[in-house]
Image (cartoon, rainbow, N blue to C red; front, side, top):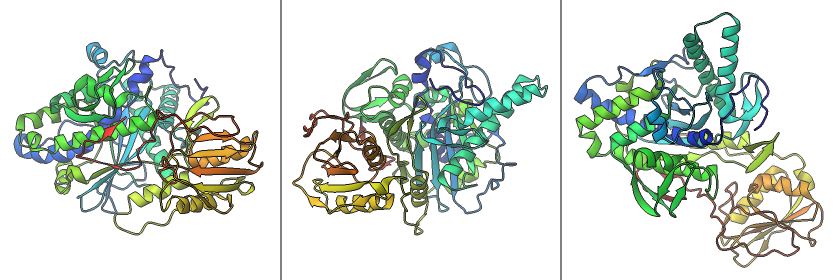
Length: 509
């Protein structure tokens, strides 16, 4: 485990806790969906449903807009917290944790799932943008560069330590203030990362118990798997094709991370696919026209959800009446492949690229500024020979433009017969050139040393598996032979770049 500078992060106790935290916090996204629908209909059936929610006062003194956003749009940060207490601070019962395969509570407070939901002023659509937990970013508050999911815990630990050193012996008060500090630092870190200060004006946070209780109350969500899956650490055991999952299996479906072809990116696709089915279920007449089910769902949410103060839920729900499941679209920020920094397995991201994509997705019909790829230091010393066997009429042009924007020199393009796989060929020992080109195509792209390639040059052979600039290709190990061999037919498929639309039942890995 990486030795983090600054305030200590409590250590993990074995591997079980790590797996327990993966993906379960995706339930927070149902907060937006559940609150959108249930508070409106719940008002009519059971009275004011906004009473009884735990709240956190994190925007009032943080330089953010008041409860009503200044631009008319609503931007909600939905966070899953690694907490073994409910929203009121009460410890979860052991039997619930055992049922969730949650392991031992070790006190860690990593925010392993973060989604920004943008709802334009007219309230008739929503865009949900996932931020991978391992994204390597600058953490605000002076903590340096770390994984995105550590922004909360660094501020929490620092505030807790400071308050106790100042003589505050009320541990409950210390915990509450440290939590608010963690939430504020996470929001500030994300806003800096996406280049949009003061954008976020709503916050919702859940813990482990909410997923089990809410999915049981709903009565199951339909999901679809490309292949049968049975994985011990998460507890998932599901057949290929469509299944209806609830409770423990729903939790296992979204939290599995190991034994997935594309790691955390596949896990995010699972989460988004589940939320798609969840939106469809919650916004269906089966739920909306059933007062008892609405009441059960609202009570389940209240047990485990923390909302930012000043959120007028009935008014918010009324504004969102035009939202249907088909108008909720899920995206993931662009990434640049895995890396190892200081012994930590992280995910490389280009802040300029992420900012351009977030701006595009949240433009609300306005013309978003064209993306300007950030130049890579050293790229000007590398010449790329581009061979197009993708079969796509636009792949070569788009790739050429991206490479030029990154600073690479481009030789003349060559058209090839259609080939299956994308391959990078480089001069033996020219690791610097390979590392630079992988920052564009991702670390998973197949790479082969080739004596026919001169130092300072790389050959990029685009195949049918290439989905366009910044889309990861099928994972493959770097090989050494002078001439390439085709990858086996069982090579993992690259994650889809097509956004998931709520209401569908997309099949995922």
